Length: 219
Length: 226
Image 1 (cartoon, helix red, strand yellow):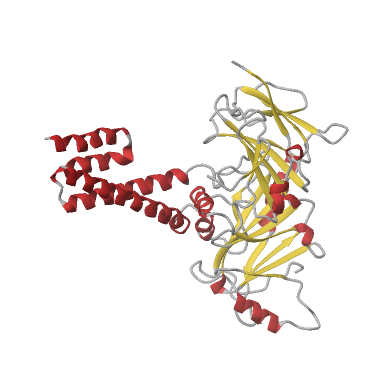
Image 2 (spheres, rainbow over the protein chains, first blue to last red):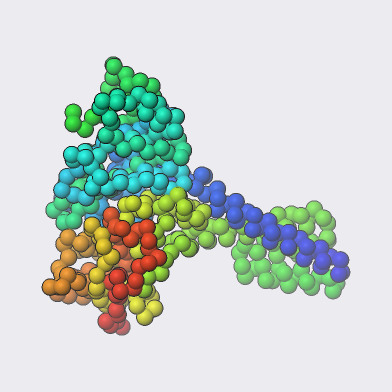
């Protein structure tokens, strides 16, 4: 009788210890296994050139669309995301600043590692290039000494992540403009090697890597 | 015969709590005391309790990592790479895109200044100043999806559209009855509500621990309907 009870107690203790291990392992595994997290959703986007609309502000005529997946969105901030995969080459995010406040945040798998607002813009243009360490070194080596690049270069800790664009509409009348300002940001993948003299075809199939080409904000 | 009472007690206790229900049944089964059954019992207990507790800890809001500032709680690390694993798991489950440190700071409030939970049937005055920021928004939200059929009058105020007093301070009244000045309608007819203050492009995001309770709006309960 006592032997059985001791064994049950022992098994319970083992079970509780196992529960602790399972708990910790589950919490650590959730971000990688989740199918509803921001990275997975951002990567599912078909749009290659412009941010995927995450939260579009309701304007007078049209309410916020159903594609919004932020749990508690800010009703006066339009949000868009661009997913990047640095295996295809560095990611260039070009934004033109306007009257409304705009911010760009670069998220990796573990969270945001860089953020910049439109106050850092040079002559109304904000150019952000997300690259790996190797791509950064290559870009540095290819720099023209007489014409230094004005890009803000950020070395990403991992290959995959997304860039979040937020535009704040201070007044309800600015909401439509804020939605447009998010869409006006361009996200392009630079070619991994030397900049190609010939741009890639404009409409490649979605399965192919995004078109190589440098998006210059000033045309 | 006497040996059967202990597992039976286990089984009775197990019926009350779901994660242990299977474990309790296993304990009853174990009176035969086969090692394989004991191992199965330990495995079921570990898997059940572990998964259930992980689900509980990552459901809803962030379990910890907040900085209390008066009635408000600031979440400076929710979006950074220094976020704890629970915060990252909560973000992943909700599909949240949290504010980065250089972008802004989120403060939430679920209680008023005297510590009572915010309720939709009550009227609150949110007044004072905010920490320095280029722009801020103050919104009220209820739990879960918005109620169908409730007119979406206004979900929040931004720093641009708010009416201020002569000294730059402001006062927002959150309640279900129309009020003069800055009136923020209750997001629902009843139940708990939460206030969110989002500061954009703010220098305090990097030093949320130094925020004083005078630097955030005070939340005062003015009265309740029933």
